Length: 168
Image (cartoon, rainbow, N blue to C red; front, side, top):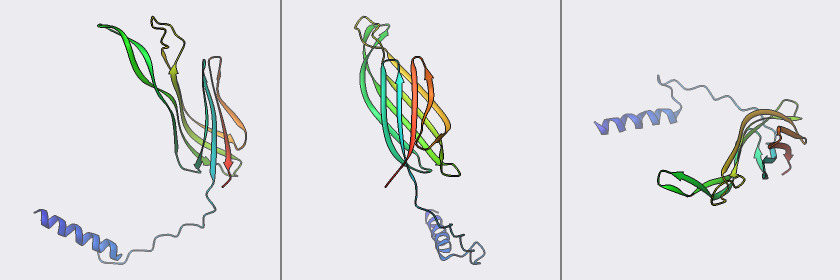
């Protein structure tokens, strides 16, 4: 039975490759893509602040593509269980995922982005180990190319983003 399946699969693959449809009729030609202009790259720059922590970075991503930016490590945090108090290492750092798309007219960019900053906060424990803190934002926004956009402006947190066209 396995052999029959393989034979059928091979026959379908040959028909597909030959350009014949299910009834043996030729398939219509695929529509031609319109002539494309040179792809645009954007430089995404950000400054993310949560209390005493701050992270800044920049990266280049192509128009309509997604970029994932990650920077961080492990830090000790105090944990309390029924067995007592101890230390546990947890991940911290910056994560940015962003998908920019040129808006009509070419002077602005629509972006779907996710930002995260996590790390040790102010010491409040017996071991003077800083407790973990995290700030996350997932949003869609339109930014004018070459101008800074403030997405969050609160007393203990701030997020600024700038999108520029990256020249090759």
